[in-house]
Image 1 (tube, rainbow, N blue to C red):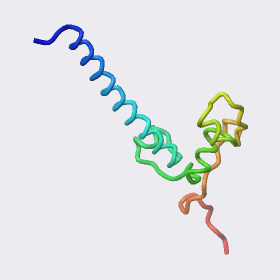
Image 2: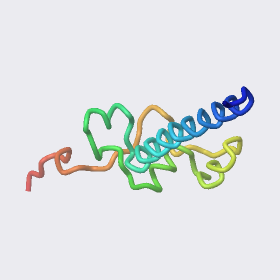
Image 3: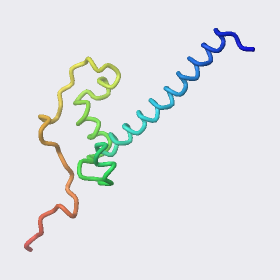
Image 4: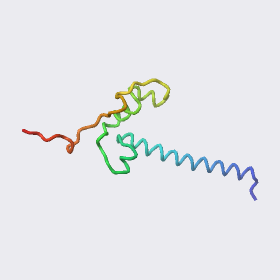
Length: 101
């Protein structure tokens, strides 16, 4: 027979492990989206590529110029490359205007 304190400890430990697994999966999924320059909505629709500027530029767009320090301490000021309304895109073959010559 298990005492109440042992049961409570096992319950809390198991809850922490399950919570850690869910949060880890959530973090890895969103890091993958960050590396690809996607939003969750774009991922679910299966659209790729328009905002993908490469992993480093994607991180700079999100965390600013001092991204490597902002990642460690979010309270540090880091100037953003844009104004937050329009975003840089990369040119895709399907989006290029047709050449006349």
